[in-house]
Length: 389
Image (tube, rainbow, N blue to C red; front, side):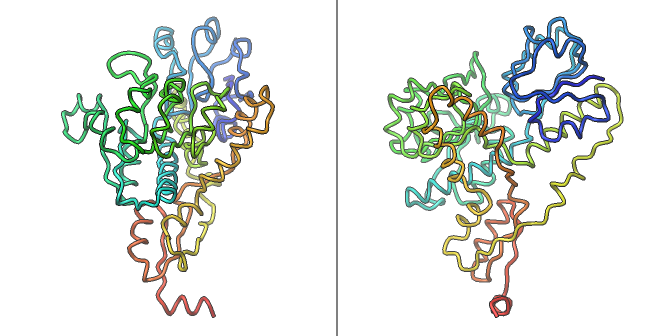
């Protein structure tokens, strides 16, 4: 079969080699002409897939190595009898870890301990539920808002949005982009939304840029505390003015761990094999990623092992610093700068690849780090003295 794929899908040529000839195309450069005789199209969230791209082509199966589908005209694919798959949950752990790094920076900047904060989680799906689990391990009290789940389950665990906004010290957004209907999320965060938040509350957005109405948001965001933005309304042509409003900002990379990328490729590969009734031969579990030696981080002398451990594994501020170099780029090159940051993003590993070394006096912190999915070694005093000698 002929396969056209976004070249930034992790290990796509290796994974799909047994299904046919893979042509890897630069992001945003996939054309209808390339698809005229193609059987499979593999994209990421930046490529719109609709009638304009597929009408008249031979594509029989489409897959997106992304958790969302707002860039896919699924109704068109269904009417065309074209197979479709995506990768829900593939980057959920990566995003949840990003949010933990953001929460700990918020604590450091505000001088408050995690146990002093209430976290409002808007959207309790694959990502939001993981954020809740890890944030609870840190000591935050979590308040969940998810209208579709509330309607489905009737559970009181899902609270009204006004209650969450009026109570939470930090609000973290984990909703899909829904353009219309009773649960629409497009421009959900606007002046009215912010006015209902606690004065000085922090806001984290790792969902979709268009969830925030940036024009409206700019008029009222001064009443908020720390603002963390990983996504922007007009990506890749982001508003530098909006970027300047954020205390912490990154170029849509919250879900960009190597683990998450590998899971995404594995999910769409297996879906393609199932669609075409092919036996799977590529095994993601045998990837070099899982043969990496765990990185040991010595926290025995740390005064704040949890903050220092998370920062050593993933420094959100390093990504922020690199992103803000966009200010120096000419205006007509800022879009390319943003795209290049994402395309050439560093090899980031999830917490499971790190082993934290602590002493017996840090057993409470060791328990928290384990709950955050780190490997942990607790050394006895004699072992510490022996290591020093």
